[in-house]
Length: 68
Length: 149
Image (cartoon, rainbow over all chains, first blue to last red; front, side, top):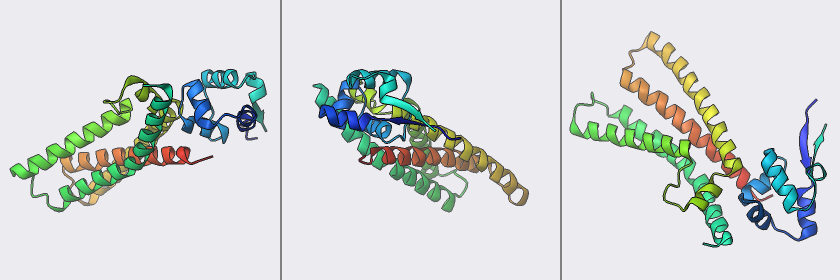
């Protein structure tokens, strides 16, 4: 069965009032990377997942989960 | 340069790169077209010049694809231009290029059964197929990623 990495990046970003560009700046990547992670197009590395969760004040497990 | 300026610059260059990649592929293909249409044996100075220009362009494209390019930009901008997604896209583009080159080799192998193909022509074809495939693939992936979410 196909598995995909789901996330609540967009939702959490919205709660904090951050734009994709602002979040990208905080974690040191481009807006393009945040956009692709948010849309589930790109699976981030562990390093980036940790940076994103730290920037959004959540644990990695709260921000990302596997959808079957 | 402030963080915001670095990010804006990287975003701008990233978009421009995504637009330029298919253009570069077309330029490379057109250059090959002229090599094959008026190729009298490559002994005139003008032919040598054309071949040199093609070699230089191919080498620069290959080096840019391999290293990430943007050599004249500040380090921080270059790092952003080659962030995680870009590196993955480049790797995928090289996979596509490898497959396309191998298929080109198979095609040329069969072609030599029916027609004589010069070594230099074969090199031109394989290199052009590989580089064009990498440029187009990288460009498509980058443009797709840059679409607004």
